[in-house]
Length: 402
Image 1: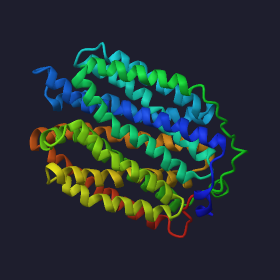
Image 2: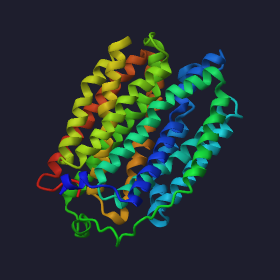
Image 3: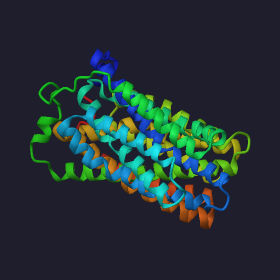
Image 4: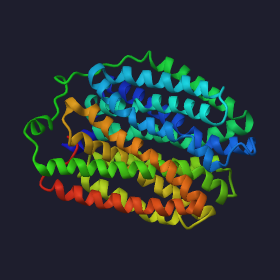
């Protein structure tokens, strides 16, 4: 059944949902990730204002709120619908980016970044919940959504570095916010129908209606632990990567290098989405994380072309696993709480994961940028251990997309 679902054509409404949420996903990650690259240019343009490590630490509040806002966003999406929550989030992020253009480096800039993080936090539980409920080919839809998101991730360092170098850091914030607001206005005119629970019965609903046994609870907890560790690794990589590339890649600009590395993650997202509709989700999830580990080890010990290649391979697997992970959350939770469950997930991945900002600052200042990736290697080792535990906890249970 999973294989048939993966080949099914989207209905017109499903197509509109896929592309609307895709735009929102791309915009969310784009605005979320402009600051690590912008900070490198800002510090270069304003010598003495701060070290790059200090400037990056100003983003902690933003990334914390990017995670903490997810749970109330998920609850709101389950009550009022994902489309409304997504649009509100984009407007808040766009306005906050415009406000950031008028701030000074330090606490006022950090406050504006918090606004960006708060607005961006609304997308993931609302958008992922909407897709998982409204589109029959769940894995493929999540994979395409991931491609959109990864395009935002990949383009953000390149475009941000070009804008900072040609216009300045304030103007970069202003242009980014203005474009997001304009595009949001256009996409707000897209008409979509969010199916009610009765219109899209969830095959897992009857299973989850019964009291859950201890193994099911343990499985969900282990999945949450894995997602949290993955979020820590994601944030650590995205914060440290532009500075590492500025230091150790000389054959192209650091922004272009960071975009190039992230670009392969786009392919990984699409492949991960197709795999999610064809394979046992536990097996696919474990395989993606195991495959990412050697690349992470190489990032910690190489420079120049080998560093870029290793970073690209890591992005393929570390970002490509997301449709699989999101499918696992859908399989292990009832539909009526789907957006809320995703809200919890993103509180853990992005909220707890935001603590990686302080790890990056501490380790980079004391041991250098490569040492940051040594720490992230052990984080992924622990992640793999939790996924192995998840496989044991769910043995005998069907974990495939319906």
